Length: 366
Image (cartoon, rainbow, N blue to C red; front, side, top):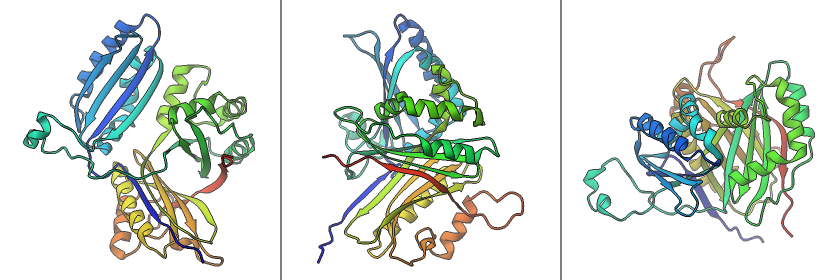
């Protein structure tokens, strides 16, 4: 008899905690004043962004090319709404032009000492993360982009045919899993990384087999890009970013095979974050059911694009749809209210199951 061992993992942008964002930058030689002037403009632009509490600009006293920007936000969704906007891409372009490398890090705040928290009435809207989150050191991220209608099969063939890059990036970073799905002409590539996400993505982009595939799909993309131009590539991947806003997992003993599925949820205009938060609540409930089929769920959201990635364990002959259903008439009504109405023939709004293209795991460490 197998003894069930369960550990609940839940990571979420929706707990209302204050967010601190850290941006580590290494500048090109001789552009320090240019960078400082660009930051001065940016800080005035974002001072009125909802949820922005303040920021600091720091320069290394040991190396003048190394800079650090920290900013504080009332909550993660407010930051994500700004950082994923078209306006943000234009605002930070002058900073990006100065940088040899940029590494963003995002943290919710558990504890803070000082006058501000001795007098909470000074910032009544700010909340601290209540408890530490559990997890196995895995960072989840996704990219999404669209291809020209009619090119879907050619793109799927290209994206499924390349050799996987080496999993080991460095002593601390490892590419664990890459899952690729399509719905119509939309592509979603989800990655799981142990360690530094930025280092892993850079490692993958530098592999010859990956570069060849990326160049091969360029003619099919709806948004033009030039991978030989660092600024063009940076803007493309910035706009393609689909951050993970929620992850929940229930690790336990189960003899049934686990399969991965993705659903695409087109939100009504301006309702993407609300839809993602609603789905996160549904998945928390699903993962808590001891007899439920959901082993883990990750929700990715950018603007009004929401993707739900599910690892599902079902016995032979069981209905897969049961793992995707939103339970109860009130929840179903909420989902329909948040989803964009279908175009063309009409009918009720509904999520779209995505077609799997590849799902590659790195080999286990020996």
